[in-house]
Image (tube, rainbow, N blue to C red; front, side, top):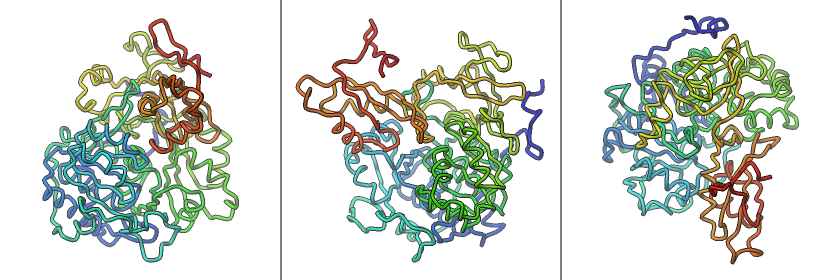
Length: 543
């Protein structure tokens, strides 16, 4: 039976995605076809496809020379920069499995991820190394490779360059220098992918369907399919100028921005961090045509003083996700970007960003995230999870298809719970209309969507429990006009800290010990936290 979303399927987009090579090899193809074309523009520093291909091969060989075995895990702990791209493609070519480490993470957050995944080689920024160094001696990390953002910066940046990483800082004798590694390795073609279906590309951190952080196993075939899917859906071509601002450590930046841009032979304009002014200048000066942006970025940009002075006529596509776009914001976007087609989406790490739903360009529907693209999707009853329910009725969203993960790393029971008869049970509640458009209604898991990032209360609670004054802690999401939602923590103090520890002091401690996007902006101290008869904290009673 024909899928209902085929009624609104965009013309020229294939209904099935076929890939015959690893995604890393599309760069090699463009290096042969258009060697001098610009692959990356980093604040004015241009890297051609031929150069990028050689860098990736050099890095792949250097990892092998440092003992990287097939399937070994390689961590990348840095902001958006050419080194991230080189490390990512080089690691996969060398047969490694990428573990993205959020550059906002502190040592207490890094340690369990590195332990869980068995990451043995890490590429990091110099200015982030102090956090990594705090846990390095207690973990089985074989090699740490360090780089500075300035290593690939032009002498005169075309845009304001992040200031603090430019400092030379301390020299670390127990590490390897990234540039020296590239210069000291001969370039020769490397690709150790033997079986795209079985070889892993990523162990991508996720909360899974229960809110407990896990590592989703994404195969080379799944990631390649999602990359080519994004390329075809958005009609990417060598003439496109893609704004690489969405964080590459996040699945949306990695799979919808960075990889499809390079697989299409286009130009990737990399910006390390978001500020409205730098973003506006990059789009206008570089003539950007495609931008994958979190709703908070769009909100900040449309409200920037003097924004009307910029020429954004080249921008043709904006893709967003992580939170719904209001009708008011959509109207402001259309006014600011007159030629833009706006696309929303819904995805999750376990099925990749492109493996959920995406708006057919030119057919945006208020309140809906889009239609299924690569995978099949059903809405099933909440009681059994087996019965598909009619259009416009709420149920659990389940997904089946080529981009669904192979499972959770070393967690067979969690995998069995999440994937049943080939279907991924997302834990999200939605409804699908007669045309196959999906609306997200609620979440079965206690997930906080904050500035486009997933914040798992159990993760924040685990870190806060290490505070010496905290006896109990419960974290909930509260509305936030800018961020969508923000974490708020309710804490009960140990007896000898009552009247001494303050809410402000706990907030400051959180600032020092966890990533900014997930740290609580509010802390409320209570004498005790409400509990059920079984002793479980009743979060619904916390206000």
